[in-house]
Image (cartoon, rainbow, N blue to C red; front, side, top):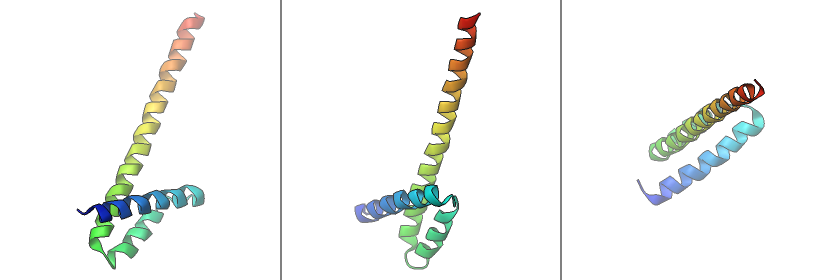
Length: 81
């Protein structure tokens, strides 16, 4: 895949995620993907990959933060004993 496509897909995914965060529409990327697919399947695929990676990272980061908070909570409970 060309650097241009990767760069464009990454920037578009970043901007799309910002719109999703601000509007609360967590499926907005689907609309953007459909619009892209009508004119460039290559860019659509690169964009959707960028979106999936970002969504997966958010989910994983939330999981990591939750586990750390649980651990710290347990440690505080032990210290109080």
